[in-house]
Length: 207
Image (cartoon, rainbow, N blue to C red):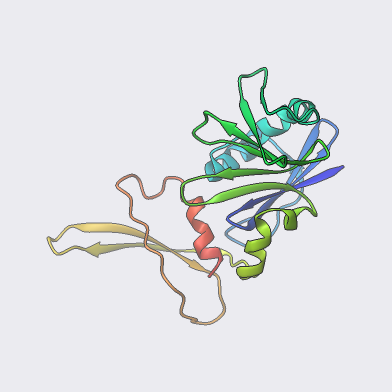
């Protein structure tokens, strides 16, 4: 059994256990801060993670054997049967090319130990349990608070602009004891404010 941990902006969101061809999952409940019981890793959970990192985690596990078959030979470049193209970088990783949301593979002795999934303003890391300090996560662990707060929805409030328009604003607060003051992060969007809010919870979870 191999455990893989999914981190989003340095916050541990999922523990994926690889047992043969079967995958199971423990997920962090962002609203309570508690861990859910282990269950099968299904497409529904995969869609949640894709909402954070814009990649399919299930797809990585489906392709991992072929990736490692190529990586064990350490070519300068390789292309998978499905058309994914990778280029070796400094003998430690394979960066995916010609993808809007690439999946970059870090390896040692022909085996993948971490996957970096970068986006515009955040990074997700899928890493073998115990290998965190060999990745960018080492910097997060060094510089960011370890305590993760549950996310509390405080309600929808209307902010009146100078021309009389009302802007609907959803407020999320970190679950903290007492009336402790916390910083505010304002996110404005011309689209539906309830669409894909999970990526922004990281600010609340950090307090």
